[in-house]
Image (cartoon, rainbow, N blue to C red; front, top):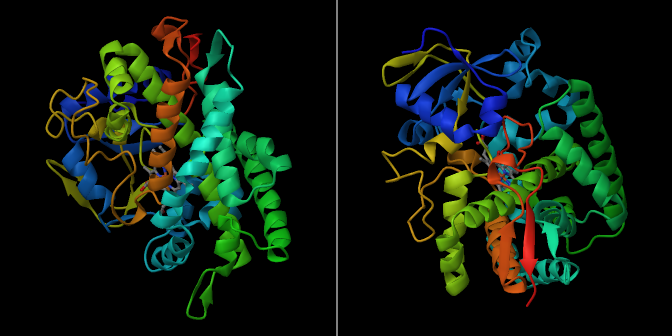
Length: 403
Ligand code: HEM
């Protein structure tokens, strides 16, 4: 048992799976201390984590949590600074407000639309990869994943080409641990950019998601401009780094397991399943977003009091041996279905179909363009971005052999 709560920090960023394995051994839920000093409950196991993600006794309503945010000098308290943007997005709401927003945006954001995007996503991937032809070395993150994902999400949303770099830079600030002032600035800048886009778009509707959001209606109900701004910022912040990390973490997993790399090279039809395995094995999000108990909640032997913050450690649940046999083994042919990398319940990732399509296409085209890829550095030397929430590499340098 732990009498002293575990303090999470640099070791967790470097080796989340090692830290999670130790915590998971101790039990399904623990009090841990975040790098900022805030005590939270950390859910380590798959069954309990999945149940709690869908448990209405855990609220995501930021308005109720506001007082607590004020009391803690926490990484979450910085949300106050940009409350007008992120706090009004549906990821920080409970039903019925969440239900209304999710219904309206789902109308604009359908599976069918994503399926139709596949040929175009492939073109984007090929164009970026074409620009790397002849290079003996490149960085999978900066030279491939970032430009590909940035182009896809920007075109999808309708972000003008001139604003794209700025969008990505602000989104990256918001998904890294760091000072509150920088986060507030980035968030306000994003909101301003999107606000200008909404005004321009009203006069010139197109095929993009922003146009669909403006048009989306449920009877007389529509999204207000502020709601469109909050949602667009949420999409960018939730959909950019995470998808870059899917490509980066998945590619690292393959480079470290040459037999698995050979298997997907031999049979690219394995890639759709391999993407699920990459998400399970080394997913883009370490943890769910915050939740707060509205009443005492008992998990196994432990009762979490009312009013406490809870994080579901998605990366830990996805390596729970009770659910996934030999969880630390990468196996692109296993059934990784049921992993929690996209969450579960009413807040389950709305962008999952897009992320899955981008991932499958990115790996398929990357392997097709380069018949041989290997790391140029010792994997232990790779640097991870400093974030408790997101798990992704700063860079992934590879050496190529040309076709
Ligand atoms: C929600 C992960 C890509 C938009 C979530 C949640 C997770 C997640 C874990 C649930 C958080 C919680 O319940 O606390 C991921 C991963 C991605 C990815 C691992 C890539 C591999 C995307 C993309 C988009 C997106 C591409 C949009 C273009 C959203 C939105 C929500 C969400 C809007 C909030 C849904 C709600 O509150 O109902 N995502 N995401 N995500 N994601 Fe993703």
